[in-house]
Length: 96
Image (cartoon, rainbow, N blue to C red; front, side, top):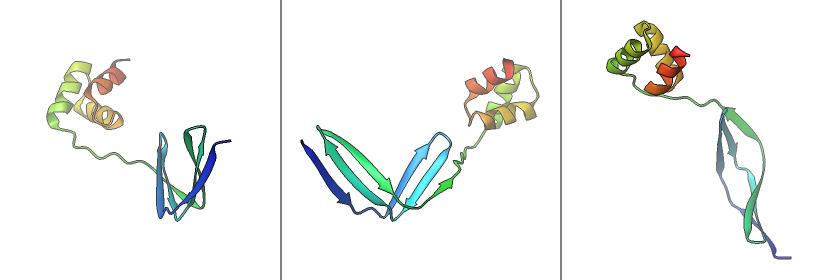
């Protein structure tokens, strides 16, 4: 039927999701090829890690957002942190 399976030697597998990261240490990973499509089966213990975003928010960016949205610099900084430094998204979030 055109199906093949291979066990892969994997020491760590990291899956990034919209809510964080799943880290598998020493998982069992099987690669399955069926009709030309590869899929992977993963089993094992994992831990969840929350995504962290580190960026430097400049005073210039804070001033631009504060001026454009008509808010204080503290509000502008919080909006920039929430938008991970995206100036346009911060402004839109403050003006909606």
